[in-house]
Every structure is written in structure tokens, then in C-alpha cells.
Amino acid sequence: MTSTDVEWIDNHCHLGDDAAEAIAVANQAGVTKFIDVGCDLATSQGCVDRAAAFDQVYATAGLHPHEAKHGLDGLEALLRAPKVIAVGECGLDYHYDHSPRQTQRDMFAAQISLAHRYELPLVIHTREAWDETFEILDTEGVPDHTIFHCFTGGPDEAAAGVERGAWLSFSGIVSFTSAADVQQAAVECPIDKLLVETDSPYLSPVPHRGKPNQPAWVGVVGEAVASLRSQPVTDIATATWSNTHRAYPGLNLR
Image (tube, rainbow, N blue to C red; front, top):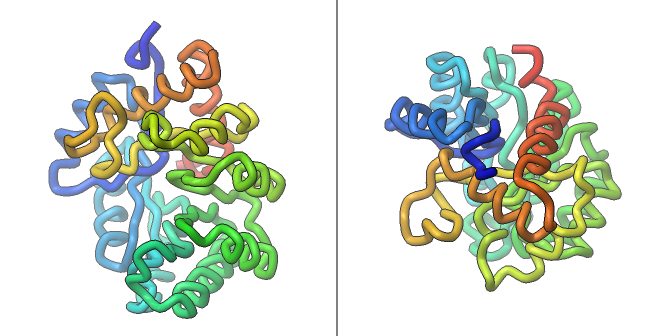
């Protein structure tokens, strides 16, 4: 059985002007729900608009750490829009430092507060900043529904996330032979805390590296996880379908 014989959700993608085509192609691959993720005010508004236009699409609104220096003005209003089901992506990225680190920390804490206020899931982007990510979460209080998207840590970071009740979402990185720590984290992640995503148009999984990623390939990520865990693809598809609905309660209600 292949990834196209079962049903998938891409819990983290960045749709664009070609959304209609991308959704149609993904439907042919068994992908039937999409969470379109915002990174600043403009992209979050685009997610809201696409969620309104396409029944299968849901939106988030958030400020990526790269964009933290631009502030949160206007974003909170989008959290009240129909089919906005999470805050984020937000967090810390100390690899590129496109925004000052203190500004990143402040904006991350502010968005955790918004997740609490609106009782919405929190979608976290963290890169080379695990200790401070956990420190801020512990200080502000971990939202009941917290997702580490595009998980890039190893088993220790995975255990720390799961200990805090979070879900771990694996992207095409899990198919890279160079990502041994991420692969081991995928093996050790409890099955009820496991999610898959594409993060399209970025991070295409093997064997599609070098091409723009697309939601149709979330099942390819699922196949890679299944292979690492020595489990049937159907088990991963079934688990991640259920897990995504638990991680994002708005998928059930709207």
C-alpha cells in the first residue's frame, strides 16, 4: 500500500496564487485538508482569503521570527476571522537572525499570550534556539494545543516537547540521510504525538529534492516516517489524520 491509497492532511503549507491547482493535484494524491500558514500580516491575510475560497483549506495567522521586527499590528484581528484555527507560525530562529533576538523573544511571548486569549493552537518555528524556546514556553504557559512544526531537533528535544504536551510535525527533512537526529526523533516520537507536513514550497522530500515542494507530497513524508518506524503507511496515515484533528480542534468544527 502506498501513500496515495490513504487520506492525508498537510498540517503546514504555504499556498500561493496557484492554490487551486496545488489543491487539485494534492487531492489526486489523497490529501484532502490543508492548513495554510501565515508568517506576517500580508501572508496571514492571504491564508484567510484562501480559507474562505476553498472548503478544504484552513488558515493560521502569525508572525514568523524572521519578521518579528515588523510587529503584530493587525494580526490579532485576523484571529477572529472564519476558519482561522491557530496562532503562528511564531517562535525563535537564531540561524539567520533576520530580526533581533530580543525582538524575536518578545513577539514569541506575545503570540503565546494570544493563543491563550483566543484558546487557539500555537504553531512554533524554532531553529538553533531550543533552550530559549522551552524557557519562554514554560514562563508564558504552554498552550493546550502546541505544535512544533518542521521539527529539526533530536530525541532530547523531541522528549522535551512531548513532555510539555506538544505534537511534533515532521517535514521532508525526515527523508534526508543527513538528518539522523531528526530521523531518530521520528522513530521515538509517541504515535499519538506524530504529525506530517510539507512546509511547501520548501523542503521537498526525497526523491523530489531540488524541486518546489507541494502539498501533494505530504504522503511521501508519511512514507519516509513509516519506513523509519518499520510501520505500515496506513498506520501513519491513520494516526496523523486523527492526531491533526486533535492538535487543531478547529478542523472538526468548521
